[in-house]
Length: 163
View (spheres, one colour):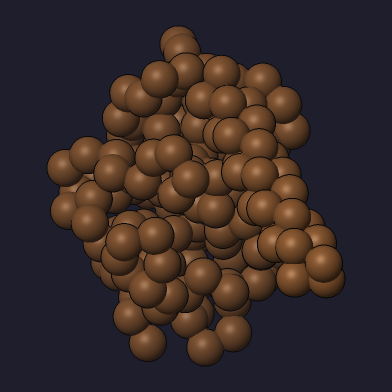
């Protein structure tokens, strides 16, 4: 009887995790909810900050680290679905334009269209935050092989920092 109870509890846990993932994904893609609201910006879109051993890197308007995803190959947004839940895009509402602050260069800013808006790019790399970076200066996503590829921070010149 205990084995059956454990299996039932495990199934309920898996179903609950899937439901939460679907709900968060829907909120991100529909442009509603905290996940997407956190990434729709009104202040300077891309800024810079000196962060430990990486030097000056790109951050969003709240000081959270911005990352590039190697599989994007500076051509398109490839992080979608559950990937975009873990690595939320730096999004703009349709009609908004990205802006630069600090040492970030306006000439390197761009956008890619996705369902629900625009993803900000820098030197043609779509930009993402990492869900576990909660405070300015955190770089927990640096060098991770996650969601199908490697993630790195960018310098103000648009170069990938791999150290």
